[in-house]
Image 1 (cartoon, rainbow, N blue to C red):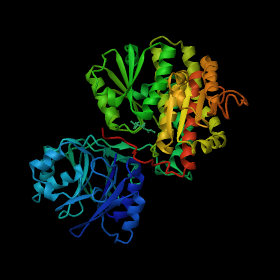
Image 2: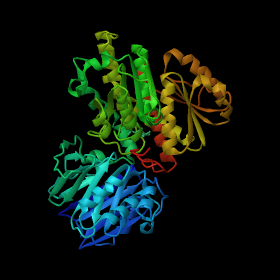
Image 3: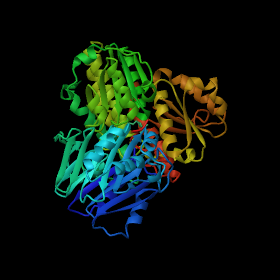
Image 4: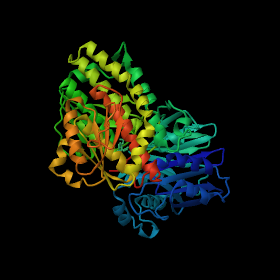
Length: 604
Ligand code: F6R
């Protein structure tokens, strides 16, 4: 949460920073600010609202400074006000911060900082502390300050009397950096730097960076120079742009076929799953007696889909846990448990802490991560990278379906290694998985039909998603997506459970989106649909039937391609994503930046 960027170099910094902030805006968009250092002075401009508004504020200013920092905020400590926006200035110091300083109140008391503060933020306390310790030696002041902090932080700092330099340090909160012909750049993630360089490094924790126009020095807390590992980006700047789509979310929905192809194809050899290049030993699967999946939100829902396949096909027990709950449990985990962690960003703090707990309890951890070099990837025993490319819309779409595909790859591999699946069965399964992108392409052809459903849902205060088995799991994700971007209150229910309470909420015209794609329970779901239809619901049936024209069953039918039961997940996902997308669009909302949210959840 929060996007931070710093640039120092041979070019004017202002527009580089503002454009970078626009790319980072999905990390938070409550307020934004920029600080520019020139001729021994730092000018700070900041305000509530989106980066576009900050751009307006900065336009009249001179654009000659070549060193600056910028921030886009997701509020944690202190409301959404101009004063709480970053950068924060105190004396000679100006800084931006992503993370949470847990002991900020104690610091204010211990160092009598109250008189230096004008905001309600924890971040400003760091600026005040730095200013207290600063006597002309920035490294000394930074070291002293960092020793006093507890919590997560990524900090970029400028000192008014030190021209052309940005200092940076982090603990937990992400930050990457690169230098190129134009200068040095540091940011929360790659989207902001990829146009400058295809090479970057992850800022090592508790190392002090000094950025100048000529390059970046990295030193540990003892003062030793460190050469961080250089990584390269496998996507280009066009991937982080809308490419003619009105919103990133729609673009990302349409990118799903390629994202799945890129994730699955490199891991198929002779028609079977192959993790050789990922370095995942067969032993990991052979030795595991049970699986625990930990993740948050949409990523957790992808894990739940994986649970269906692993339990159904392999009869290996799988427990899916919400990371923020799991991390405070005394989990039943041992050496025979395989923990699978899912995270698009690879930075979600609850997921990261859950991972550490699983490892501490002796479990091997495989993570399914989209962002290369992210903290979760680095902390895991094994990583299965998904190749979805950058996901910019706050609502996750393509990252979800590639996570599902990765879970299916793992299920198939585990089945083979354990001798539960015959080679021929595994080959058949893989043929279907390889076909998943085509399923999605076929489903996307139905987009206009799906769009019409949105016109009904946009009027409703509430909506329900129902289904059984895998369809119920898909409903959970559908309800999350609809709530998240269209603000329609939505709930998912196991279709058979409605009559135990929830059916009381079904009145005239309430939208019920009913998934009936699981052959073994199809008849049962249709009975449950009749029950809600009889009470006046507006029913949208999603099924593989050729046509359903019975008004006692549904008002609208969305037809899916004919699929085996576990592969309906890919078609269902697209339908449900499009319903949420078009509802949000029809309500005139900012689909990519829903209120109160941020893409990467790096606070608890
Ligand atoms: C919802 C959504 C979130 C994320 C969750 C985990 O559309 O995107 O629920 O899935 O915050 O994020 P990652 O996958 O980055 O760990």
